[in-house]
Image (cartoon, rainbow, N blue to C red; front, top):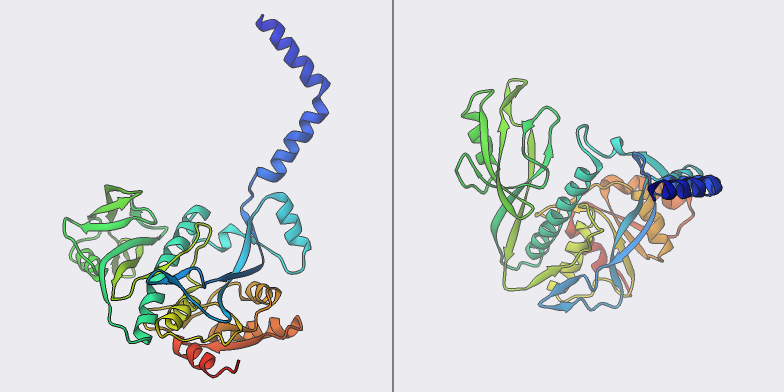
Length: 338
């Protein structure tokens, strides 16, 4: 019986060899990922139904929008197109990750940056609107692990305690490290994938400084008299939407319409004090904004020259505005005519 089955399989392969080779080749072409990604002009994300104040969407004549870069993982067809299309670029994974980091870890880091950006945008908007708030339930999470670190910590781990001591400020970890000797270990209680675990990190010396080779960011809850919710999708990540999230929040919290009926698109990180930071991929974001008929593009001061260069080279008629703070963006929009 088995001999007959084997003969039938062998006969099928022989008769359909060319077809099977083609099928395998197609599978390899489309599903095998190479260590590259392709970056290309993106689009815009309207925020009007993403930001809720006391359960209500923002009501404006125009719109606030985040700009984004479109990214495709490096299978062969996308890489070929990336080499051929004038506005597409093929980027090696090693150029967008740290030296000891996988692309999956980089993506996890970007997710954390998005959550911090939402926190910062909320605080910046509340400060600008002069609405009292409190910060509670601080959670320090591992953002980066140096290549020389000797640790069982992983990116995304939430630190619950250090050597049995609870803490809120990252400086507390630094103090514990400095009190120990090189070669000693620090014991962490962490939360990973919803479970409480233990991890260790060994202290090492670098340029006469005691280190364990990690960096963290702090996420937190915000308590105020206004219920604020910012919805994001699983596919979204990174900190570059901070400026626009803080802007639409400020607009809603102060009961204004800073859009004046226009399509406002922008990009830039934000900190809790409302300072706007530089971002990557501005050329793709300018192209995406123009494609989606933006009237105004708000851009960090450090990205302004590149944005203007793209605007002029492409012959776009976008109004590009350089901003260093949330206040800069508000003052500009307050001066617009409908």
